[in-house]
Image 1 (cartoon, helix red, strand yellow):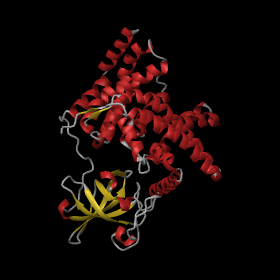
Image 2 (cartoon, rainbow, N blue to C red; image 1 turned 120 degrees about the vertical axis):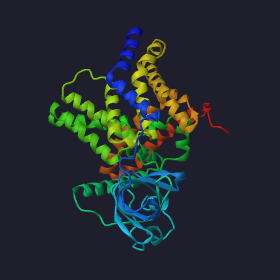
Image 3 (spheres, rainbow, N blue to C red; image 1 turned 90 degrees about the vertical axis):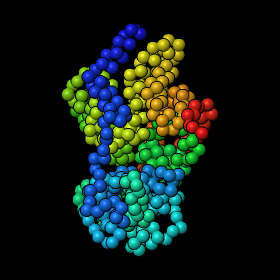
Image 4 (cartoon, one colour; image 1 turned 30 degrees about the vertical axis):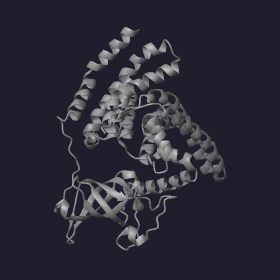
Length: 435
């Protein structure tokens, strides 16, 4: 049995698809293959002359710099200089949006600044900083090509089906945020798991997960897509039999991605799901997941090369690659001594840790091997919490009077998850920071 596992691992390592992915990774992260910004700024003016940029937000704003700014990618349509000259523009630039602007419509995050000060143009149109919003930002470019906004103004909505769909997404996310805010800390965790919004995640909860090596559990990834895909598949089978399974599964996955937004880890999960669905549609039998992951990696690098150096990209692919390549090897000695659920959990955690340890050490200067054990116990709790949240959200939308009871039930589960994470966070970790 051990010989078969080792032979299987050796075969996977020499497969052309795996070799192509490994060589591409070595070229990328070895500094040989440079990744340029595919959508660099193009306009008639130099960055140093530009006072304002206008365009549509194409990513979910993410809080940075201890919450003082939110980072978002903006697809440019025009720029204006300090002298008042204007030009059309193309490209995607990173914009830092002041928190008082980005959080203007968020429940529980009201600011005392006047509308005139926030909008900056006296129009009174405070922008909704969500993906698809058409906004003009005033500020300046930094030396790294990041536009630091000081004020912002909402521009008129565009017409068309696509822009109507994006507007519906903004409204849906706003109302969902308000519902989850009313559920307190448990609602903040649901926001992080379902939409990637971490503005309402408790600080001590985030610290406990980070110190316990559990930050990856909160990232939007394959677990979420698998759950929504399974729900869609079940509905499709009940309504249309075998013919409707794949279609409903794909629609469910795409709806979740549409709502949550395409983060690098979620895009990886989407690519893997689509590839698996294509294999099933083509009646391809015995599909090896490691081959699917390698194909997704190569496609991802071609379609979105600018994400290859993002931390979430490296951790997402590295952890799953480690699980698929080393998990089965490590599980052989463990399965003889431990119960099956512990053996599989520890082997998967070990594979993920070994492949992501260099990235974690380089970025955070720390290693938390306790995460291998913590994941075995916390991931099932998160899974139960996730499923419970989906059921209770549907019930609360149908029967609003049940909302307070749903909040109470989720608070109990949230408290248990938090206490378990805090327990593991007390374990020692290794620090590599130079004093």
